[in-house]
Length: 247
Image (cartoon, rainbow, N blue to C red; front, side):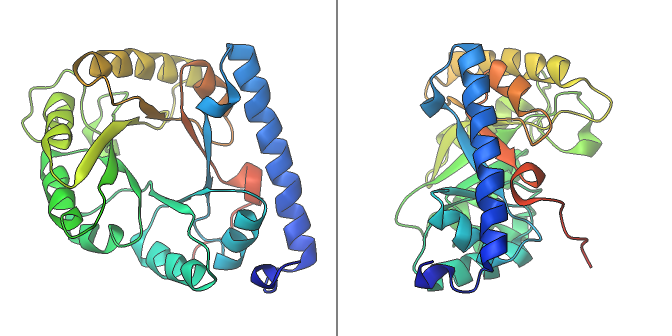
């Protein structure tokens, strides 16, 4: 065990190593079944509610990408991991409020959840102070329900329509429009959801050829997401075990 892993119990490190091995095998098998190169899919370890020690242990096991949902937890955790001398690639994947953008851009390399023109503007303003752009993904509402979050494909809404959002991201200084993110809606079969997302992604790439990232799929449905072109899968429980209860 290295000095950086010193705060992680050996049995916990072994649990993480076993979970990581299983998830990596699932991703490799899914890529093979889909005829895709394994290197085309990045696993994001979703560590919300888990301690910084788990992130440090995962980094020691070769995990390079870490996802968080809430700024108040992520900011402190990222600082603790940096103090240990580690700098994984941090992905902010939760719903983002405009007043949190300035905090989020201090540690996040990628923001997955931009779903309005106003949020794109706030994120761009906050990112202007950085020495490198923030990669930004437009979150897509697959079922068109604005209450769930996500920009609306085919909508003319000047703030929440997917076209206006992707246009704002592509034009913003301080941001690099990288692609799309979505979550399969409740009540939808993953096959139906990710097939729909693939159609939306193809249409967006016609206008923005460099926006090739597709963040889709979690512990229970990553194979289906990979079949439909996911480049990033967000894995929590399959990697880290059952999630602790939030207080």
